Length: 395
Image (tube, rainbow, N blue to C red; front, side):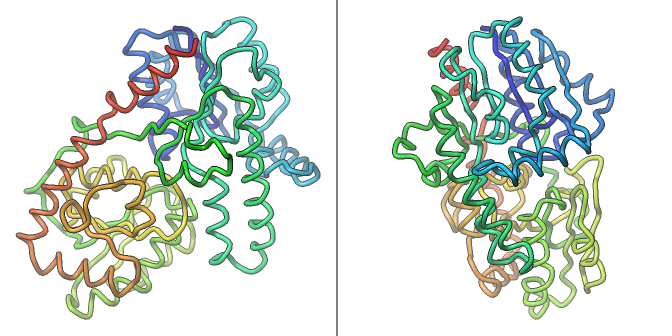
């Protein structure tokens, strides 16, 4: 099968959720012998190592379009001036990239086109009905932005509210441009404002179990761990809530309890958390497994955002006991109290964390059950086979 794939980011290194999802899907599809032609946008330089990691997966060709700062600015201005166009779409849309998409469709003549994320859908609007196409919503941007409104600074709220409304309308409109649709979880599927949203195919994420292996005998310098892209608002919100409100409650029962906040591009607000008692902020790590291996308990106190939290899959695969909120758990699944602990307030989260720190044997049982659950549920080959079958049945 000849497959044209459109991505808004180059899928390596694996430091963001959309990049991780795209990379493992490309690796599976290439391994199955499909001719993949990839067009990836990028608003940052792509290293030679990144190109070397992805090029072998793209037998049909690898094309990289660098988004310039001036072009991104113009795109945002045009989006603001265009009724109904989200800023998310304007930022990633350039006429030169559109010409490249049009040329690849004409020259490569794909059997199927796979478009990751709503922000890339604009490039295929005029090609609707001409070739089989699938849109991967992945998660629901409109819901994620809407959830930010309540906690955002006052000056940001009108812009975020407008963007949430535009995204919701755009997500529904883009439905008709594509014959097929995928999303990461049923929780996200229900948030798509379209009367036929039940027709969206759920294609979950997976976990690389050969890479994320338990390191149970490694030193544990940190009691608690939270990690992720620390320039991403839902992660910033979670890290600050954890360090500022939840950790102090844990420290009432465990005065020396420590927290590591790990992950790339920490904002100034996240960096400032390191001034708080017991809190460390690592920034980017060359191997995130060192953070998992060095912690006793993983916590993902997500209050905003959508989609499946890859960080939870990684932590559970490395056999850490995990604590999270209903928002994250609803996408993950599992049985609270058996595979992980779930709570929705700072006191309840703090109690769950303190209980695990006080009961190493119980924490170990929870961690072992959690690893078994993700091993049985989140295998990259199994979940991506669903995507492959969708393509093969609609060429």
